[in-house]
Structure formats: structure tokens, C-alpha cells
Image 1 (cartoon, rainbow, N blue to C red):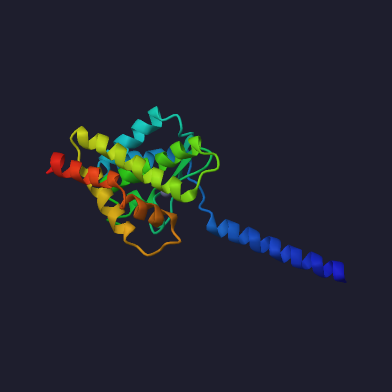
Image 2 (image 1 turned 120 degrees about the horizontal axis):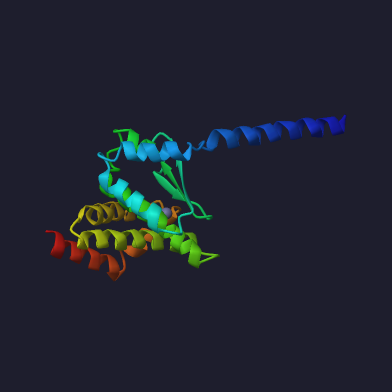
Amino acid sequence: MYTQLVKYLLTISMSTILFFNLSYSQPFLASEEGKTIIEKYSSKFPKFFREFQYVSKNESRIKEFKFTRGNSNGTPAKASKDGKIILDVSYLETTSNNDYDDNRLVIVLYHELGHLYYNSKNENGNVEDNEKFAFEFSLKKAKDLAVKGDCGPLNTGIKFMRLRSLSNQLQDPHVRALKRIFNEPLIKSYSAFLKKICN
Ligand SMILES: [Zn+2]
């Protein structure tokens, strides 16, 4: 009787775990489908498309791009420990989330690439330092684009980072990292650069 009860409870908890795993994990699209979607939206997101192609070809730290389709309510991209960047194509497909324009998606892409750089150097890294590194990496890449004549990503990147740095969600390592960034001289040098070069 007792063993049967234990078995019964085990079965229930196993199916609950399975159910929650299935309902929370986004299924991946086939890789070709994901790439086709990025290409399909290349006229709406030309800078993102260009940088996506560039990093796909030139960044050996990216082992693979994976694609999901969420509801553009979460985050447009994630980096995994094993060198994958996961892109949520709903951010390209829906027009409702205008916060993520072409410039910002470029920043997001380089933020994720920044995580892969950080992970490759720090095996037991710290989440907050990892975020700080990723934000600063994206700023550096955006500055390179500004030097080549496009100030959009740097402008947008600083704007959204500043906004997020003001959040009081201190449990979020992104927010803690941004508070540090906005207390250091580096960000001022980027802002000064923007003013000098881009206005
Ligand atoms: Zn991050």
C-alpha cells in the first residue's frame, strides 16, 4: 500500500515536472526557417540583418544561432554557456513592440556576443560582471559603427541603458550592472563622443 502510494506520488510529480518543462520551454524553429525569417525582414531591420550576417561569418565564438518564436514580451535574444545565441523572431515579425527597432536589435545582438566573449574568458564568472561586460561590449561595437558613420545604435543603446539603469529592480543583474556602468567614466566618454561626432 505504502509503496503504491509512493509510486503514485512519484508519477504525479514526474508528470508535473514534464508538463512544466514542456509548457515553459520554447520549441526551436528549424535553423533554415529562422534564417529565412531574418532575411525576410531585412528591409525593416537592415542593420540587424547586416550585423547578423557579419557575426555569423566572422565570430568563431558563436557556435550556432537558434531561433524561437515567443510573443515579443520577454527578451529578443539570449546567449547560452555553450556558445549559442537564441533569437526570438517574434521581435521582427510583430509591429507592436516598437521599443525594439533596428538600432536596438544591433545592440542586443552584440550584447549576446559579449556574453560569449565573457564566458570564453571566465569559467566561473559572476552574473553581474557578465552583464556589465556584455553591455560594454555592445557599446564598443556601436562606437565602431558610429566611427564608420552610423550613430544610431550607439545613441539608442545609451538611451535604453540609461533608462534601465534607473530601475529599482535590484534583483536583476542587468540593472545592477547598468548602475555600475553609469557611475563610471567610460559611459561619459561614449556620451561625449556621441555629442562630438554625431551632432
Ligand atoms: Zn545579458
